[in-house]
Image 1 (cartoon, protein in one colour):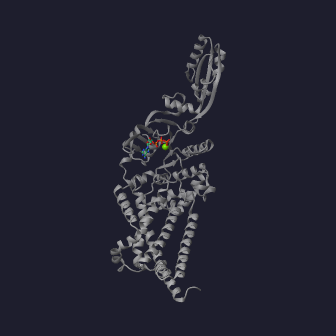
Image 2 (cartoon, helix red, strand yellow; image 1 turned 90 degrees about the vertical axis):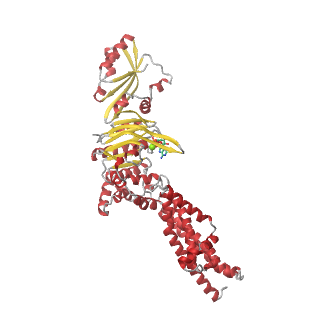
Image 3 (cartoon, protein in one colour; image 1 turned 120 degrees about the horizontal axis):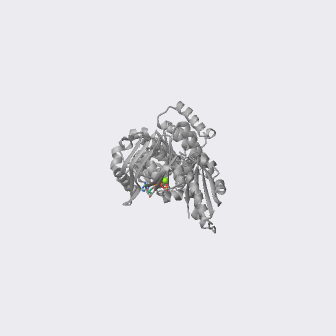
Length: 337
Length: 219
Ligand SMILES: Nc1ncnc2c1ncn2[C@@H]1O[C@H](COP(=O)(O)OP(=O)(O)OP(=O)(O)O)[C@@H](O)[C@H]1O
Ligand SMILES: [Mg+2]
């Protein structure tokens, strides 16, 4: 059974008598040990969704099962205990400005009633884990964004939760810091056996660490699948837009002065096939001139993948034969014109 | 020296009376005003103890009390003062209206300070399973500490000026002295000395407050 099961989850907000449907029937299952990403534009309902998972938000209808327990059946006290199984980090870090780094991490332990001596050792261990041992006595105002998020992570993981919820945890960080925080999350996930739910509006974040992704639009899931599948063949216009945010789309390329000589073919390779010399074979075996317009190598969910855009020129018979060959090889492809 | 020994003795008694009124009412005001401010904040819509009814009732009481001018308020609460202190005249009696008026003032200032604590920090505390009490004690109050210190400072200074006003209606203290001798009997030197003493007191408290705010500001 999935660790987190969401069924028919809906949330309607009342704003000045107006109904705002933030979530409109979400069905989703998140497996233990995976990094599950939810991507969507601003206002899509991402925060509302993730807040329903630890019941910071009360759903209007639908159920959320975590480890088989229906969150709506928990009384206030039970819910408090339950939340300790789920750490959460935030876009704005939300650290206590009046406490030092160590004090912020210790807060989680104090809340759970841990003794001072035990807490002290645990705080040191946690700060070591996120690489902030030398900042124990600093106040949040003296830290960089990346360091603040590391404190957030240490605080979230202090009570050894099984699940880590990340609400746009890297959205206010620069690309390099984003990568280092994502790497830390990925590393902690494997070391501690966490299940991570991560929401973002950046496809790069999804491709960098997620195993599966759900695309959220106006409170509805428009696509759910393995990141590599959604990346290679997005099944919804919104998903496609997100994929294109990583690499410029071909439509965008065509907006320039470029005009193709033959057929525009986009080829997507995964894993082993990356090392096959496909273009070389095309030239050797068929009478075609593949012109490479764009090539990318990406690492998606720890798998190497490549995207190749070629302009395949030549006699139409030769082109058809070449396309036939591509079809039989172990790649996915798409003819764009 | 411009003041004779009788005047000096009067000044001493009046100063001590003022200090007594201001310190006792400051203490009582903080003791009740801050919790009242906390209640107003946490019973708000979407806050940790959301309660529309209580929020409205508290808001009404605070506004109603604040809308009465202080000299009238003193007279208005005389029955209560008699009940609590046994008399309506003298420094101890004055503490009752002083405290009541300042509590609601303090509550509003507390409210403003606490509302400045970002809601995200409260959510972060909820996400690790903090109780409502823990959120008030470990999140709201420490995070709002500089603002609260400033609120107490402003309240104490207001109490000094209120206590001088109260003096005029039989409360004793420096205000009483200034009016009776400085104004009614034309002893302007006494007036000057009381004004200077009050000024020093207010300045001293402001400086102390500012220092504490600086010490606890971490943002
Ligand atoms: N507490 C609330 N009261 C009223 N409306 C809300 C509330 N929270 C969210 N909404 C509305 O619900 C919708 C979804 O909001 P949500 O914050 O979940 O979006 P999001 O995908 O997280 O956006 P962003 O990327 O900007 O954070 C929006 O239309 C928003 O205005
Ligand atoms: Mg959001």
